[in-house]
Length: 131
Length: 181
Image (cartoon, rainbow over all chains, first blue to last red):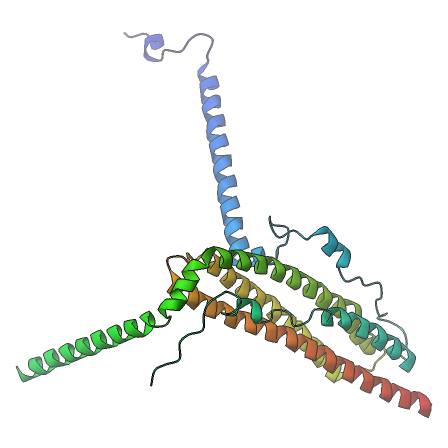
């Protein structure tokens, strides 16, 4: 007959339940980190693939300057969406609308072709084809 | 036997044609840029990348500025006017159609900006020092996308002008009604 103590050598201080609990805690930690890493990767891929990254100005290097924040178009007027509509109301609407559109017109030719032209990038013109 | 010979000849002929077309394509691709252009791209690579990065920042700023302005015009003017016309029982079909068009074009502007930005970023990441052909080909693609984006901004601006024309017409019709009352 073999004694049970010889088969499972556990010190009297460490109960088998404690060892099992510690191992479970380790597994839980590894699984949690794994889930966190996976979800972070998935969200970053979605963020990039959806194109939101290009619209996000909070990413490093694209933060708005202080003076730019000051220049942001301010809108204090909102046309009321209720009430009887008169020609006077429309007149007021037109005046404010024209001001709001001026904000857009303040940017002359946005996304013009010149910054990407051969000339701007120092690329010489292609030689004329020989006849 | 005869059929086998014909099929062999056909295979040989198609092989020869594809090899010829392939090599012709290669010749065309290789001659897309002159030596002088290749040299300039390679030589100015660092400066070009710097200016493209600067352009990326300027474009982000422009997009943000225009985006806020479009959003403001839609939510503070066009939508409330449309609602008010519906609430007072005098919906204007032309203004409603324009409203939908402006929303669509604005979405199109965002989509085109995203596509352009992606292309610009890819362009910046190309090694222009060693891969001039690839760089130039991407540059041409990015230019086209930028032109489309520019067209979208012009389109939105034109729709705002059309909206204003319709509102003036509405004002005249209201003025007429008021005078008649």
